[in-house]
Amino acid sequence: MFTISAFTGWLRRHRFACFGLMVLSFVVFGLLTLDLVRLVSANAALLSNYGWQGLQDGGLRQLAELIASTLAAMAAWLLFKVCETVLVQAWTR
Image 1: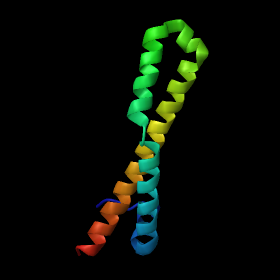
Image 2: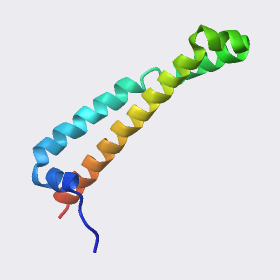
Image 3: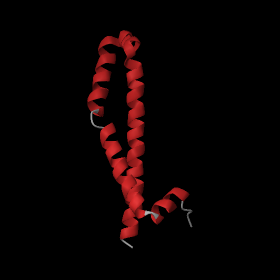
Image 4: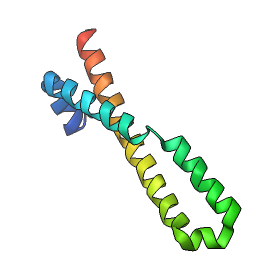
């Protein structure tokens, strides 16, 4: 048998809070990924066109910030999926 984490157990006991957290994580994911593809491609073009000078002008820092934004968006998406799974399991039993 598997053990249920304390967080998913809490989500199962508080379905309205789980739904609110799911909505919040969906909004955060949407906001973080709004222009992500455009910004990453612009950063790649900057680094490709200007090379070392682009790195010195902040291209590497911007790339690190974009990667951090991507990781935060993925964490929000995973939280959304956890909440979705908990709610679907609860409502289909």
